[in-house]
Length: 371
Image 1 (cartoon, rainbow, N blue to C red):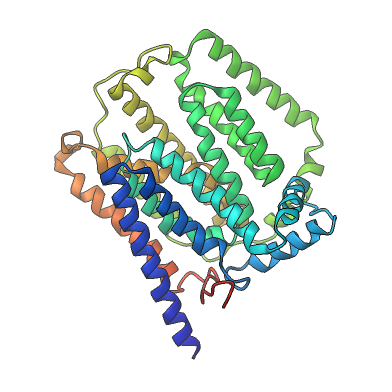
Image 2 (cartoon, rainbow, N blue to C red):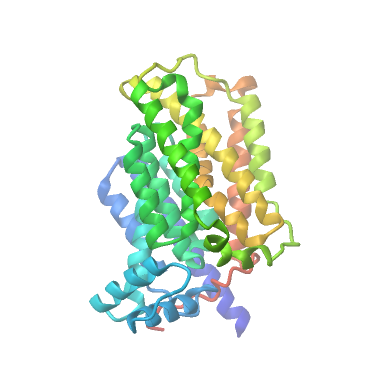
């Protein structure tokens, strides 16, 4: 009986996977916001109306919702408790909150992919994200809300509106997960674009990084991080292949993927030039890809700590989309089919584990809340 339930669940997830792929392909082909809305609806519907037993952490989140509704505070992130309390007074049912947080996760993520669709293949970006992290987001929902907000906030990095990006990091940190503070590394990595910045942008970066560093040192860092000490107690002995495969694909693409001939203009003028904008997105996606994988590699030693890499690793899927969208002439030795095949193998490998309960993420069997 249990095997039949799991088989039915695998079939259900497979159907949803096909829906996500087809809808994301329709969005790519038609450039339609209606199709984008339907895609968002499907992803949110499955995640938002899941039964309390779907996912390792769903039952714990429901407890947090009830604790917050009764006026108590969730110790790790009081801002999250406040938000839950407000939402529970609007609708006192856990599905409403799950749906709300699903809308944050998939809404901000899809909209960021949508903004980059001219330079990165939307279908590949979305489907890769779905394959890697859709099922995991059913577990670490609170942190994925923070990840999605920071990821969407990188649009302000592209526009050099650093203050707005800082605000997005603050919101993610205060109301969802304190680990979102690691998003400040995006500003540090902007130093690689130093020669392309205006003087006022350089001054702003130096000042904000200095203030952040001083503030971090003057805070009682030990007390601030004490609540996450248990993350270092959970050591990981089962080393998976996901990060090594991503790193292999990264370095192979560096070898086979030609650089553009278009130098970046100074003073941020790349925004007005498609080719220079494409080079900017490529360069930054590569940097974020590598940083995300290196930070996620910490998870091979301390399981939970690898999640800090998720704030950057979503750009892996942007980079995958760039490779799919790029013309063959930008690849050495006519190697685009090789890179495309490697990417599809990695995505398929990860997705297979989720669909058929190999990775043990506890999203099997799936039941709706009314079942």
